[in-house]
Amino acid sequence: MFEILPCLPMVISIMVAFTLYLFLLNPINRRYEAALNHLLAKEIARKLYQEMHPGFSYTTYHEDDDKRKAILNSAVEEFRKLMTKDV
Image 1 (cartoon, rainbow, N blue to C red):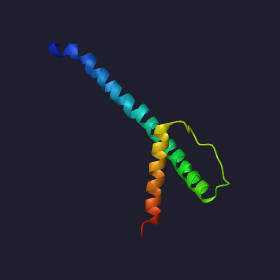
Image 2 (image 1 turned 180 degrees about the vertical axis):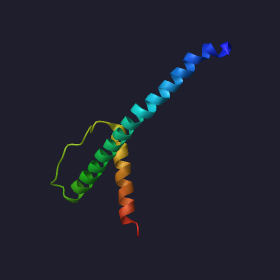
Image 3 (image 1 turned 60 degrees about the vertical axis):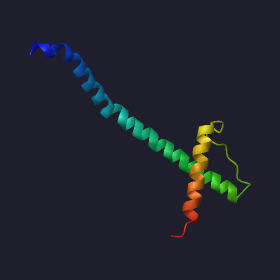
Image 4 (image 1 turned 90 degrees about the horizontal axis):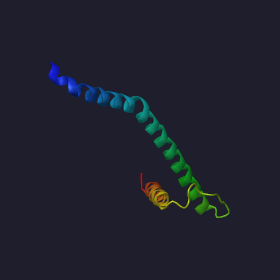
């Protein structure tokens, strides 16, 4: 019985870390992901509307971020494919 005592603090700390992840970090991550999806959807709509009506102008969110531009462009292309696809 006494041979597991040195491992007990490590087991308890792993359990505490897992509990913190489940109750704190996981819900925050889901909210952050939902907020990013909302921003991405707004950017797609604005970009497509600007292509249809060139007089419409807006400032993009973090337009200098290349990774965000790539994600936005791929999402717009996928949206176009879905819209032109025969249903």
